[in-house]
Image (cartoon, rainbow, N blue to C red; front, side, top):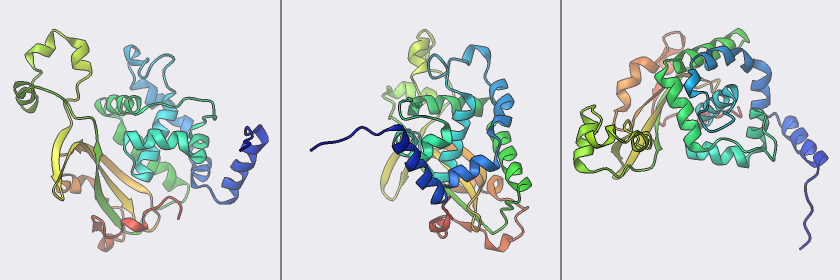
Length: 258
């Protein structure tokens, strides 16, 4: 079978078709000036951490856009890594070409973890929400509050190490081995749902039913019950408060394509 290499104009034609079809990410790029977020993003990265994800470091605005993609499409780190390589709409949104290598799941986790520890993730999404409001995208169509498990690699620790982690301590043997400590995830936890055990985190989101916009966002260990973040996620500014829904009842209505 004879195959041809895609040319420059072939890619342009594909992008044109995406635009004609109403690519929601292209529309989002027109609405939100993501460069305005750069000072907040980079101020939260200490100089010693500028090389997160390798050298040269990943662009901070692109990494924030990945967090936005994860929120919009309810994606874990491994899933978004794959889809960045697979979807032209994701590549265009992030400013990546076909030959560019996007970040892997570990790098995505590192950036999100650093910004979370720096206390700026909520501020970033609050600002993102304000920009959408200013552009006339008022998300007031009732709320969907839901949580999804994000699986991470299972840690192979000894029993005494796990006990120390659960009590909030660093296992003694790790203190003399900083490189080993750097490879350990001490925040993820086990949970059981529908008879299946999973190790990782939970993404908690509040999404507007009508406009499909993520209003609020939180991340916890997987063992934290969904109800623990309910007060934080519910938005009293949503005037149609009688339409608040929890769980899967209106999940099928949440899509960035509508």
